[in-house]
Image (cartoon, rainbow, N blue to C red; front, side, top):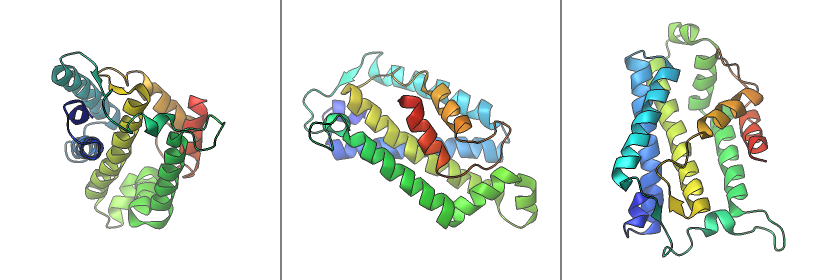
Length: 200
């Protein structure tokens, strides 16, 4: 979203955030799959890298979007007149439905469950586990990019350190949703609903 603060169109900023999220997910997937770095270590290291990059790019100063029409409306526009139900809630529901469909109806989702349940058995069944883990991390990165857009919209600025601490909420949401910290599969609707409860 730094692009928007530098005068680029809003659509370009949103697409840029999604692409950067996908790229970071791709790199995480490559490090985990091909270099065999433990996922927790790889993603924690990437978090520190991205925080440092954000501080350098922004010169440690928040980038404000005061002159960007319609951006803050993503987080503040109410779906129901007189009720405080922001548009971001609808976007959360759409993202949850998309994730649920992908997990339940696509090869990516089926392989994600298989890899999470028993990675070695999945590999022995002839599935290219490394390639599919790369795709899973990239898909996850797209959602992270969208979440970053909504967070920036809520603050109406790009805060270089704005997301610190949310990683603990993300882990808590996954655990509340039924996923074991030691790995395995969980019902697809559970993590999205758990994440919403963490924010309420």
